[in-house]
Length: 192
Image 1 (cartoon, rainbow, N blue to C red):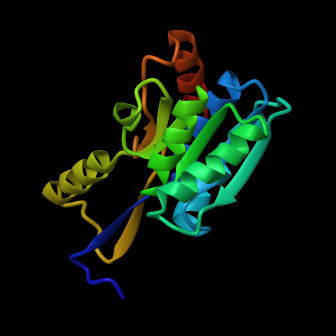
Image 2: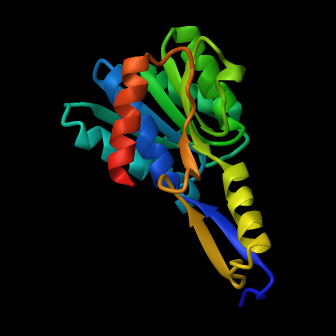
């Protein structure tokens, strides 16, 4: 049991994955990849949303998926990415902790695009990372603190922050046109 003075702040990974799936579906020529660290809910949620958006867009886009079974092995991330690139992937979304840097390196070397995770990642590979599936931790904290100060804090339970609360979303970078940003924002608005 969770004590009444504690709340768990969780994020809807599927919502974040959905937002970057919309972007990938508009920017790919037909094959995208997803590389996860391990096949666990906090990773597979990103993939579920990613695939949902791609399917919803109604395009014939192939989604290659593989797990590195690690959150630290960047060399394995790079090898998996290179394999996906050889199969025609032109955008690879990765949710693998330390595995990500190897994926980004492979994408950069091959001149294809990547999607980061959890936080704005474009800074790590500005020419390669077009967006990131974000967990807006600050938003979750802000709402929790506001609830506490207004006497609305509900302890002993978990709160899930999603697209409607602004708890998850996507990173805006120079790779995204104003038209694409408007398109994605309108789609996300209709999901709320």
